Length: 134
Image (cartoon, rainbow, N blue to C red; front, side):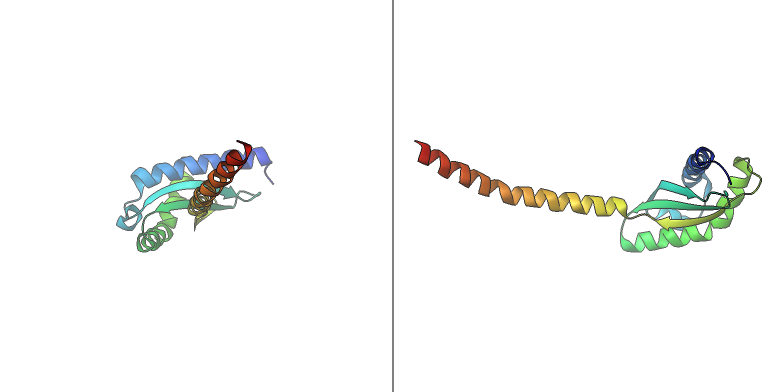
């Protein structure tokens, strides 16, 4: 079992290397369909498995195509990680789509809508109170 500090360091290293591969290394055209970024990497305590969370910007069709391209490039990514990162065993790699950014932006837009709806009510309440005070 690796220490938690070592696991987090390996996760950051994998995140950096996979990001570089997404920019330069992966030649599959499907991966370039949507804008892809690595948001997080979760490495198991024994350093045998790595879940790579990716955020994909684009249409649903582009997202599905990009995920298919990433899943087919898993072997390449693992072999490249083995060459770039010095570990006894290269972890098994799994790509998982991260939709947290979409959920966050949806929540923010809902909060902004609520704020816009409340402003006229607040202005109306303050206007009525000011007239009564005069």
